[in-house]
Image (cartoon, rainbow, N blue to C red):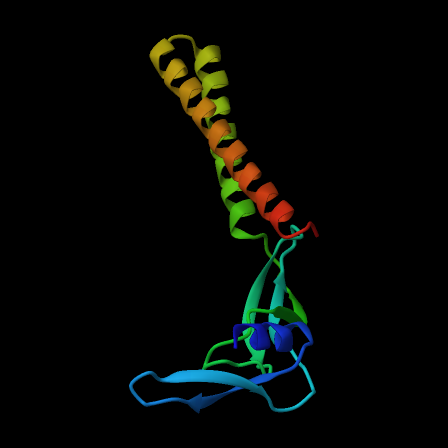
Length: 150
């Protein structure tokens, strides 16, 4: 039965469950209902930075195994431009601004003289922020590589 299911999936034939067996076992086998095949479609939101995310579900395919479930194939129905950056880019920009503020403080404190402890604390904060920025950039790059690029 599993081989029949795999064969029908490989041939792109839609499947519909039909009940067989006693009620205590509740077994199902899959039969071919029609030969037309469509996939599940979603909206795609594209950000200014080039990143994207899946949007709302738009259309079911006829491979729906259970009510409310999808086949797992996500195809794009339409691409909607979003006029802002993605969350990762926003986080990166926020941390860059914070690091720039710390650098400005350090330059001001050096000009004014004194506060060596504050300068050291700000340098440590800058180093920490730079590590966080690198981690966010690596995470964004990992998403690009996992999805096959843009």
